[in-house]
Amino acid sequence: AEATAMRPTAVAAPRGQGELVLLAEDNQLAREILVAELRAQGYTVRSVGDGAALLEAVAQYGTAVRLLILDVDIPKRSGLECLAELRRAGNQTPAIVVTGTVHSGLDDQLHEDTILLRKPFQMSELGRLATALLSAAAHEGAALRAYPAGLVGAAELNDIEQENGEDERANGQHCRVQ
Image 1: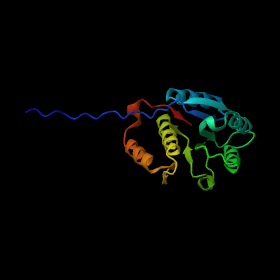
Image 2: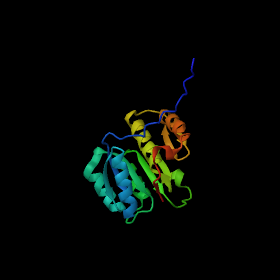
Image 3: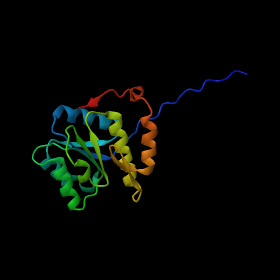
């Protein structure tokens, strides 16, 4: 009898289901790339270039916003200042805080539903983290565990850890945000 070679199956990239993502990034080129990639991953995206516009957009879209992606260093109010104000006001929207600079004690300033993502990063990594946060938020009460880039739900952590063993280039994810 002939042995059949087992072929690895490709892991499907995380996909949004039209959830509204609010992106705050002051670098126009980076913002355009992130918007295009997030839309390609199945998300509805609104983007702004500074902290004041971020707070206005959160007020405008309210609870329709399912995920915040915030650059730390944006003009008019930093991403962290905006996030702190939103949390004080009771807004618990999950967030991914993005930074390309070293900030002392940054991890200590983050809310439990917030993931720190350091630049440069792979677009597929952003997609996995977005999926993990949205899934954890959909299953409120899911225990959150530490993950090197921030916090995710326990079930999502297992998925991410398994996927991290995969070569990201196999998914065609060569684009990196720096």
